[in-house]
Structures are given as C-alpha cells and as structure tokens.
Image (tube, rainbow, N blue to C red; front, side, top):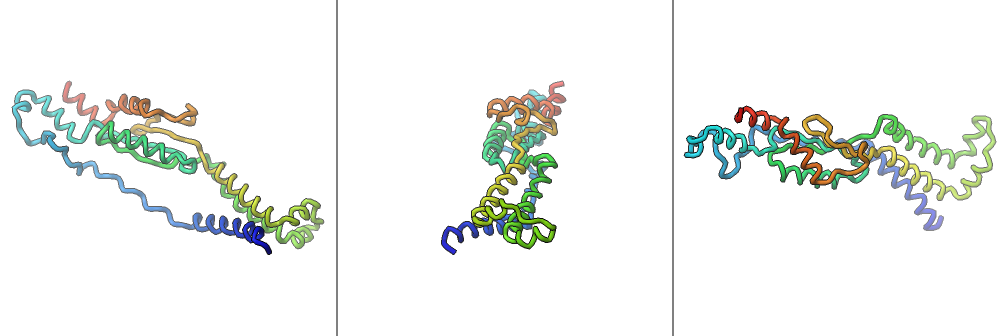
Amino acid sequence: MDRVQLLLLGLPILLFCSDVVTLFAPQPPATPKPDRHQHQPATGAVQPGDSSPDADADPASAQVAELQVDGPGFGTTVELKFCASCSYRGNAMTMKSMLDTSFPGIHVVLENYPPPFPKRALSKVVPVIQVGAIGTLMAGDQIFPRFGMVPPPWYYSLRANRFGTMASIWLFGNFAQSLLQSSGAFEVYCNGQLVFSKLSEQRFPSEFELRELIGSRLSDSQFGKNLEKVWS
C-alpha cells in the first residue's frame, strides 16, 4: 500500500473519529446570566439616598438621575440568534459590542438558530449512509448475494479505486451534513419581539440600522416605562 492509498484510507477514518467524538462530547455549560440587581453604580452617578442642590431644586431630575444609574439599556434584552455553522459568530460579536457601547446596561444574548427539523433529521441520516456505502464497497461480494442480487458493474468500477471512492463518500457526506445543519439565519429579537430577520431580508443589518431598531424600542423596556412615570 503506497502513501497515496494510506492517505485516502486515513482521511475518512480521521473524519469518522472526529464525528464520533463530536457526537458524544458533553455540551458546554450554559453561561450564567448576570444578576441585574447587583449592578455597581457608575462613577459620579447620583445615589438614591444622596442629596444635592440640583435634586432639591428639581425632584424629577433627581429621579431621572437614579434611573440612569444602570444605563439607558437597563431592562432591555436583545437576542441575536445566528447560524453557528455558517461562521456568523463574528458578526454577532460585533453587533453585541456595538449594542453594549450604545446602550449601557442592555442584556445581549447570543444563541444558535437551528435549521428546520427535516434538515436536522436528514443531517443525522447522512453519517449512516456514509458508513453503509463504505461497508457495501468493502464487503459487497458478500452483501449482494445475501439479497439474491448479482453485484452490478458500477460496483466493480468503484471497487477498483476503493480508497478514492471511500474518501469521496466521506468528503461529500460531510459537505452535505454541513449544508443541512446550516440555517443561514441572523435574527434579532428585542424583548421577545422580532426586529430584524436575515431570512426575510436576505442580508445582514448594518450597525447603524440595528442601533436605530433597538433604540426605537427602548421606550417599551422597564427603563422607558419608569421614565414615562417620572415625567407624567
């Protein structure tokens, strides 16, 4: 067996072992959500119990200053649901950094957006087909007669270059599995409401666009409701 045959044989074996390890590997622990009741006040912010000339002169301004301790984004949760297998995590991290900077106190959650159930089910079937095809290629002389069939001519053609055929089966199978596991999604939710959908728009949102979409919905957050009560 020459080096090329060893390479063609070792590649699918390596990919198979990698798939098995990934399949049975434990899920990473969930990232704990920050406790919003333990936010540290910003430096120089007015404390609820402090008194100042401005607070004595204008009680409404003092209440607004208290609300600003946690930032204008406090009480707002933004969910960025993206396709992890499409390498969209970099876009999601960029958007998260922009939102954290634009709206201090906002809670941004990154989450994978899975494909539809039929695609997920088919992606689980692909490895079974790969193993079956390779097993048939290696032991077709015994398998076909058991079903009362004569090995077809294409079987002998594929078996003549079985190492290349095995590598092709595994590579194309992994490509199909990756395609089935991708959703192509980049969905943005603000307090449970969909504000942008890449599946509908067929494009990514710009940073300016996403900032405007989230900023226009801050009035629906707990901060916005409390602010309305202060001025009413």
